[in-house]
Amino acid sequence: MTTDWIALLRLAHAEFADRIAAVTDWDAPTPDTDWTTRDLVAHVIDDQQWVPLLLAGKTTSEAKLAVAPLGDDLALEWHRHAASALDAWQQADLDREVHLSYDTVTASDYLAEQVGDVTIHSWDLARATGTSEELDDALVDAVWGVFEPQAEGLAASGLFAPIVPVPDNAPLRVRLLALTGRDAS
Image (cartoon, rainbow, N blue to C red):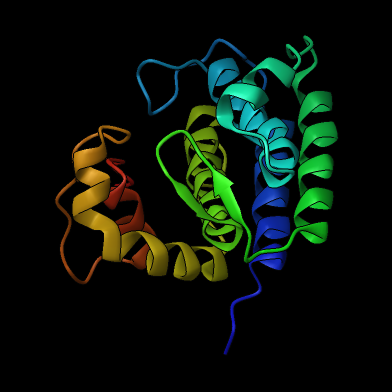
């Protein structure tokens, strides 16, 4: 069975939007000790801004010059840029190459990465806002299928905190988060 990554992106976007709606303190800490809630949300929005540009063939240097600063209303910015990114994904040739900062990958690989990023950051935002930390099982399964085979590379990338040790029989959500340096216990 083929994974419908665009449907999963819609679901990840909805989960992130639900968490944004729960934000009451934009300066609250997040599981990433370097980021406030505002920083976390701005990071995910920035990623969405890049999607249409990168899918159109721009390099990261070109895209960086084309991205506008975010306004103060991050909830509004999220909805605007998430919708634009989703539209770009729906129009995209998923076999084309996309130039990312660290490599050139297929658009389908970039899409899976985006689903993973938004999913993991949905949990971060849930933890920051004190809301439900559950993640949709379909998202967890799909992202695990992408991240787990890359565990060593993810750990070595420096993008995540060290892997958190958890029992092999821990729920998949807990194992996924642990793989990305998050303690979901």
